[in-house]
Image (tube, rainbow, N blue to C red; front, top):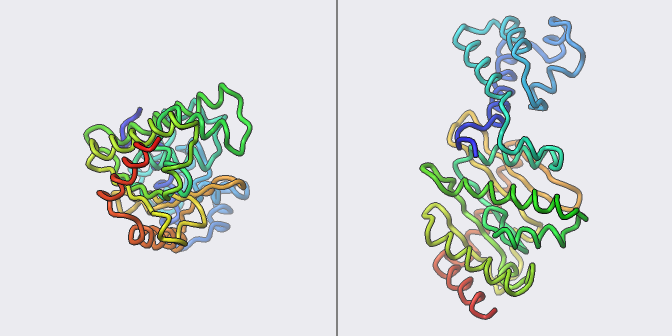
Length: 287
């Protein structure tokens, strides 16, 4: 896996934000800037929205000229463009993944913290490969076996973020239903529960909580989601959710804030980490 702090996805996202800010500072609308550069309609809008896979350095130079960028700004933006053109480890799988999912992987690679809630199963960063296979085999999409194997491999590769010198901080909340739903059968679930216990005990930056059935309704009943928090103020936090309609990456601050409030409420209704480990251990023993 590439370095934790070397995601081209985040570089492109940061470049888009910097270009938006520079245009605003120059007092130009997107339409005005496009006209002055004699660009086709939509090119600048796509750049500012981050809807690119390989930033064009010449486009960035043209914008720097138009906006009156300082030499330092120009050098910084061109470096972002160069690094944004690199390929992440997930590039080889791009044809089988949605754009939002590849964005998730790219941003996850540089997040400082990921906060997750799952109502029916364990989060992908905590899944054994057998559990992951079973989730995808019986999921809503009818996937061929080779695609399932590749997607399971992607999930395992993502889990390397939890190791190393600068591991990801993961706070995962799961509904009690995940402790009993026999995804893949009794043996697969038992191994999955034991894996979660091992990860939580061996990795100090991993925290797991269980929302017990006794709590009744709670803020997570609308579905699974993940919040990605970044170490640099220039990189705004994001949220990700998915359902039968597809995946959705949420980046507007007010929308991300709603996910954060929901997660805080879930932390309050869930068992504390110690009691959660006891509940998971008991569930494993019963299988």
